[in-house]
Length: 199
Image (cartoon, rainbow, N blue to C red; front, side, top):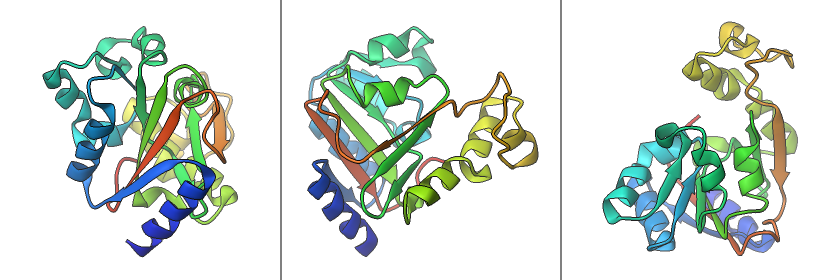
């Protein structure tokens, strides 16, 4: 928890609205408290699925857009919601957040479009610096495991090692580092979870 508190302080200094929670249930409650009755777009995220946010929002009657359940067109609707929820691929101890996408939907939504963003990030994604963040993104545990989950044919999925491939199935086409919240959004919230979450 000490490392998370240190990270939380650095996120606050950078302008993110952040908090630390002990587990997925607390993360779910924190996200629901932020969202209220707002509309919600969800990016591809095992973390979001693990905490059960989609079902909770649907049961509450929120408008929810998630391409994992509603098809590819939901990506565009998600980008215009009151809140956009996803995770990150890595976060440095000093509070720089790193993401990689195949289509850039999460990255674009964290930059401009929705009114607010919420990132739910497990402690397994904390790294020392930007170099380690990039290495984590391209690792067998991150991109490789995600490519395997999606059933795509990339070197990271088949051999467990990135070779900066040119495969049409490549899932890490767009990578971004967020040093501060984008000025295109009203608020960017970060919920740090003292558990391993997602990939």
